[in-house]
Amino acid sequence: MLQTSDTRHRTGPAGLPHHSWGIVSAYALLATGTLAAAVWIAAHVTASPAVHSGGLFVHLTSLVVGFGGVLMADSFVLRWAAGRLTLSETLWAVSRLHVPIWLGLAGLVASGCVLEPNLASAMTRTKLALVLVLTLNGIQACALNRRLKARGGAPLTPRLLAWGAATGLLSQLCWWGATVIGFLNARH
Image (tube, rainbow, N blue to C red; front, side, top):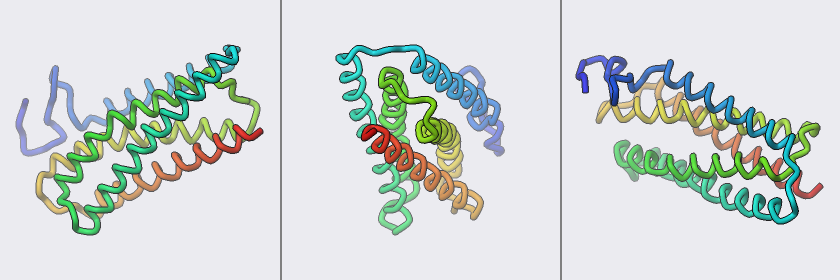
């Protein structure tokens, strides 16, 4: 690993920069394309009742795994804010939750393809927009996590604190919003 005093130039495997916004943008483009493909599949798939039931089970399980991971991560951040954890303990715990959060989100998107969503509905389109924002926010949250870890024990700047708070707030708004819309759509 190339070591410099400027963390923007640190490299990881294959010499790729850890903090490159180009990499974050590439992930964002890939995620947007994946979500667009899932919407296209949902519009063209007619699921049997058994597949629909299985998809609903996977959807609900994925919600528990993904959103549960988010709620746990946020609880660690709140414990840090209350002075009950160090920043390094918090970042370690939160980074370990990335896998279940991303697996939950992927399961929600994949299972949503067989739930025959009403794509003409404004609520469904709003939910899809929330999922896209949530996904993009999660991608940049990983970059934020790496940036915070790279600081070591240095105090956080107001800019980093604001970035973290905005990331957490946006995550909560999107997860809760998509969950409420999913619940309302299931009743109709």
